[in-house]
Structure formats: structure tokens, C-alpha cells
Image (cartoon, rainbow, N blue to C red; front, side, top):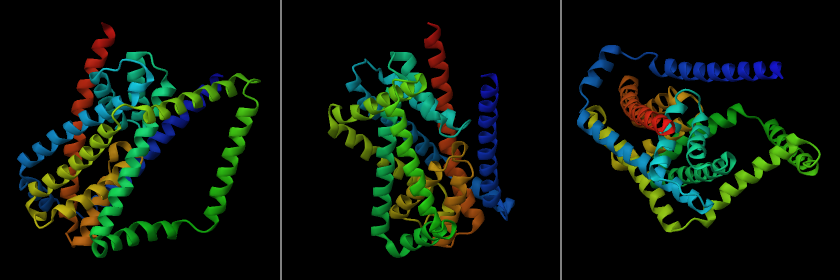
Length: 332
């Protein structure tokens, strides 16, 4: 048992440092060849009033995400305060800067401790919410491609689709199929022998809890309000991107549609499982600006840095405040 605990800690540490190394490599690739005098000049030319507005919009997004998540959890039958959902969202963000994707577990833990809801049930609501986020990202991506196929479609086809095709051969289809079959067999074994082994029984209970959380979303009151929250969140994402364009004179020729494209591409940067999107966001944004608009690498990196660091700072500040208030509320 002790050896298993040691192996688990070693695995967690290795995963952390590997992902941190990936973030470091992406940062190095992004900043390689940057002219630091131009980088400094770009930062100094920024109108930080627009950045401050972008950060305020970001805080509003956190609040909307908390309200939307709470709406999903309401059918579970527990009284969930808006402040607890807000703290959960913020603590999740700050946790992701330490361990990628761990923020989802952290915010579930916040709600579990504040309400007594089973952890796996809360996790099910997060699964549903994140599924909606991915679907929304796919729909907005499709809208952007339709709006400006010549400009954006070629970039996505060349830099993302072609890259995927080059790295994954036809054999990967067989590997994927084998993994799916193995997963189905694994589920069958657990279900078939769930009464004979405590571990299988526990896995079954967890799965039921997650499914219960997911299904709660279909019983939520005011589904139209959920859609309004989601649409407003994406509007705010676009507004954050557009205000960053307005803040940086070197890219002032970019339009509102370009801001939507950068919102989508930046979304993919945040999805990549590295600490707080560090490196991944800088790389994909600077690549898009250079490939589509012919913007110099240094200028693109400055824009990506301003955009990412303003959002990261907002997440860290809100996360730190929520951590403090959550800790104080536990002591009471």
C-alpha cells in the first residue's frame, strides 16, 4: 500500500514537470527570435485603460460562469449559494496554474465541503458544463470559418488539420478502436462483478454519481437562462479580445471579426493541458497573427503576452481572494 502511494506521488510529480516542460518549450519557441527592445516598446505603447476594461469583463465572465454552474446544480436538491459557486470557479482557475485540469476537481471540492453534495455528483455537473463549452467552441469556430473562409479556413487547414494528419497515421485508427473496445470491456467487467469486489462497487457508485450530476442539467429550471448565460459568456470573450486589439496600436487594423477569430484560436490555447495556458496561448496566438496577417513575430508575442497575462492576473487575483474567503468560512 505504501509503495502504491509512493508511485502515485512520483507519477503526479512527473506529470507536473513534464507539462511544465511542455509549457517552457512552447514559451521558448514563441519568444525565440524576439527583439527585446521592440518587445519593451510594444508594451510601453499599450493603452492599459483598455486592458483594465478587459480585466473587468473577465471578472464578469467568472460571475456568469458561477451563475450558470449553480443553475445546473439546483435540481440536485441542495441549497447552493451564488458565493460558493463563485469561489469554486475562482479556486478552480488558480488551481489550474499549479496543476493542469486539477481546477475542475478543486471547484467540485469547494461545493462538496460547503453543501455536503457527493463529490462525484458535483463532478457530473462539471462534465456537462465543460461539454457545453467544447460544443460552443466548435460552433463559434464553425461560424468564424464560414464568415471568412479564405482567411481563417486556410490557416486552420494548414496549421491544425494538416499538422494532425502528418503526425497521426492510419494506424492510429486501429489504436483508437482498440482503446474503445478495451474501455467497453472494462466497463462490462466492472458492471458484471460490481457486487463481488469493493473496488468495482466503488467505481460503479462514482459512475452513478457522475451520471446523476450530468442528468441534473436536463432537469434544470429556466433552461433559456442557461443559454443566455452561455451566449453572454462568449460575447464577453469576444469583447476581451477586441479591447486588447484596441489597447495595442500595432494591431489596430484588426476588425471585430478578427477579434472573434483570435477568441477562438486563444480558446484552443487555453484548452491545451499546460499550467494556465502558459506557452500554448502565446504560441498559437503569435502563430495566427504571423500566418494570417503577416504581423511580425515580436508584435504577435507582445499581443499574446498582454492578452494572456492580463487574463492570468485576473484569475490569480480572484482565485487568491476566493481561497482566503473560503478558508475563513471553513474556520467559522
